[in-house]
Image (cartoon, rainbow, N blue to C red; front, side):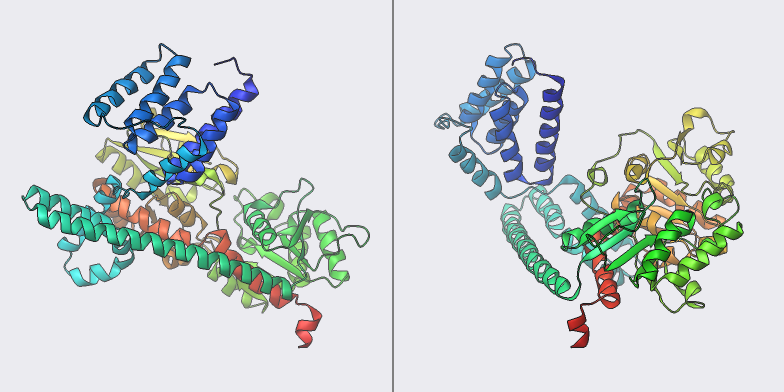
Length: 558
């Protein structure tokens, strides 16, 4: 293969990773398309020849696989991995010597036949799903109330049905009952086909519903939105997700810090998150209010109860009279106040009737959420500080130290607050890790280092108004959690347990450390819950709110 420039190497590696990720996700057509384009641009890429050979071998096309492996060997004659693959394919070929090779394995027609063979074959049940199914069966069998346990896990049973059947198929084979195994196998395949058909139908219906929903929304809403941001055009993850979702619905969205001159972009709506942090934003907000343009104020915490040692207190705390006046002014100028928890909604509604709650969300478009965390040999107990407070974790310090001494396979991960890390000075360095604060978009990486998430919060007014964002993030990464009895955590429920005392913290930690099946089950439950918070779904609540605030005059008149 000719020498490549650094840019070409980066491009090739990026495309190869994309193709393999599509293979992992089962997007065979997209993966093959990327591999073919790689060979078009980089005809000497041995890795692609090997991967295509592997796919042909998996579809029982041993002769074609050998042809592709031979092409790879001509490029790199001493590549041991290619030589090993040729030997493997040769063994398979001997058992099926009548097979003929594709003349040109990389031409579209041959790739189409490969795709047909690969997708027509029954998808094997993943061993991970079989382990989950076995754990679920054990949970049901050991339960004092099996019927209720089944009812509580109906959604999980529905997803794991092929795996549950696979367990019975293997047992039937082990018991010397091939006829029963074959019958169960046919049932398993029928269920698999029905699930795939149902999924395709849902996707078609979803696309159709989405198109109709967009049309209805744009019929009622002009679609020009101005999101107020700092001079650095930073708007935070929450409003950035909203921006992307609104643009998908056909809205024209602009992010800025000042009122635009002229009529080139006169917004129908202004959205701002905590503008009292910066004086210039308050001026812009006041100008738009004077132009009678509706304003939506988005608040992600209770600023009136912001602790003195909070990392944002200096610029957002109300101890400064000027900041306090700006905060009250932003509330008065707003046509709607949107908050992230029911507790905060109830608090503000006592003084303002125009308050509503729209929950936090996430986007599956971010590759970091789908990537697996770094492999580690220890079981990591993790705490993430988003506010720089050590007092909350301090309430749990003795329990954590006790657990670390009781279970030598565990390790403590502290992220974001060095003071919290320093509280555990008696713990050996090889039993603890400190991760510095990261930008919100890098949070999936931090979560990838954690196996059990700890969320201890003291019973303070500020904490009581917290959202469930940290549990949402844990759910996306399938991380089980233990948390304090904050109302938003109790409402979330899925994926972990709420501890009401230090004794319960110790008991629950012991159970999760000792039971990998329980950890997996809770992680899956949290993931399914988080799926309902994908930004494409949560945006519907925003759309409903925007329609209420600003509709087209002719619709309002009708």
